[in-house]
Amino acid sequence: PPIACYNELRAGCRGCKHHHTHRSVNVGNCNLHEQAYLESDCSNWPASARQTWTELESTDGAWLAHHIFVPCSAPLTPHARKSMLLVHGANSSAALTFASVAGRLSSSYDLYALDLPGFGRSTGPAELQTASVERVVQMYCDFFEQFCLATGDLQDLIVVGHSLGAFFMTRFAAIYPGKVQKLVLVNPAGILPVVGWWWALVFRLGLPSRPLRRSGIVSAFF
Image 1 (cartoon, rainbow, N blue to C red):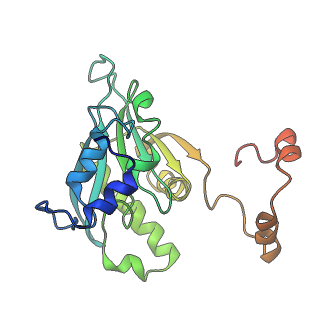
Image 2: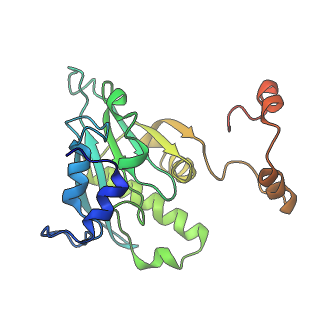
């Protein structure tokens, strides 16, 4: 029968009998079920989508980068092909965040939909759990740079970051400008300044979005 949704698939996987060959995957997070989801009618991912793990070594320790690759469907020469890096936000994964747009984007680009370490199926050093915010940002940027090097030395990327992914991608583009040709921020986190407790209260109560949108003040952010 068709798969109802990704969450139901993962829930059913907790007692599955599959042989999990990779150290990052356990019976609660089965890579075989992930591929089944990508290939199902409910996922919206193109039939050419394939998941890949890449082991990365850096001064920060061992990383395991999981991403979904979708080759460009257009008949382009290798020189004309362009690559797009998709980075999801907090409490999500590449498979969920970009399912609805992967088909259309892959008509023009080679897609690399990357799981952030600690989300989806990417893993990282234990230091990520205890490091300062500044240190975590640096570690993530090093992770992205190592991923680009290990995946065919990706250059001049069209980078799309959503939420927390957008926050990291702004830092990555600033540190490694040669890797990023264009940067697309979707509902970015950490962009507006923090000016005190009242700023958080304003967002808690809600901004008057309609007049602000008409004025153009927040059109880039909301």
